[in-house]
Length: 438
Image 1 (cartoon, rainbow, N blue to C red):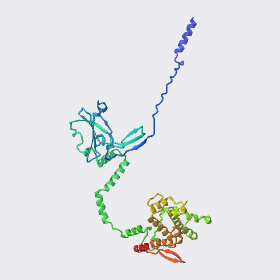
Image 2: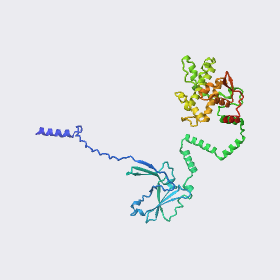
Image 3: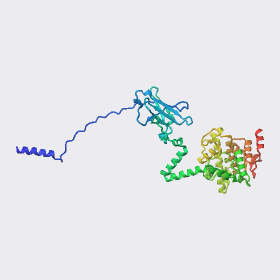
Image 4: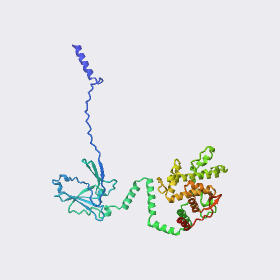
């Protein structure tokens, strides 16, 4: 009996020992609830613009917690919308529940409505039957906040006395924003803002008066103005009418600027390649002068003339790209992006777009650039047969263009040759008109 009692006691102490593992409870299984699916369908959206003769929908809320639906007769609530005759954007909404002496008033020009608004409000009505969503703007693009006003009580002392206080002008808003910006903006933004402010002040009436006084003291260079007018009316490159040498008459640096010489070394690089180079894709004018370029011993002169020939090639190919009968010949020709952007700006009013043909004025300007460069290549005595073929023009038409540049036409070995005497003398306008009538 004693042994049985001791065994029972030892079992009890073992069960009470905290070091012994406790019985593990089984976890309850939680039932997963299905998430309800929201039905969706496609709907056609109709947006209705604001009509000046119709009143758009009105959206308002009661700031006091008043609920008009709790009225025994909701239809007895009267609603009035008032619009200022002089300022049509100033709207006032009045809601008067029947049986009370309180009006709920909301405006589009006082209180919360005057705060900055960074969005537009609209009302959407979904018609499930026709599957259409109709969206229309709200009155004054505002959500009216209806404040309770007791009838017969004068609120004029508590409200702004003038419209200037209740409705800030654009200048007043700009001044307030400037003050906030100066207080809380970064140093960099404040510095930039002050610069902009100084620029705006420079456009004031005082600065304009100073500008008028300065303009009166300016001496007008009439010769420069006449030169610019001649260049624009004749559609020719920049020129120097008082030049003493042909090279100065049409300065090369006014046609090919410094940064463009790196993009027009194609022919010069091919000249270094020997006799295995193919020249088939180049214009006739360039092909007929390849041997002349190879024979030049002065490397600087060879480089300059070869680059000019490349420039002429790009101009002719650019013209072909915009000509119906020249598109095939220009196919595959690559014009450097810098030059192409320049040509688009100079010769095509719609820069960056591809048109079927260039305008007549822009075409004449491009032809003038090509002919001036041919004069530079041929030392200002150029035979015009090959360039006429490249430009797809008759020789008589090319002669007129050379004369328009101030050139004189002679014959050498039975072929027409254009030379450029200096100082430049352009044909008179009257003579040109007579030629046009023939």
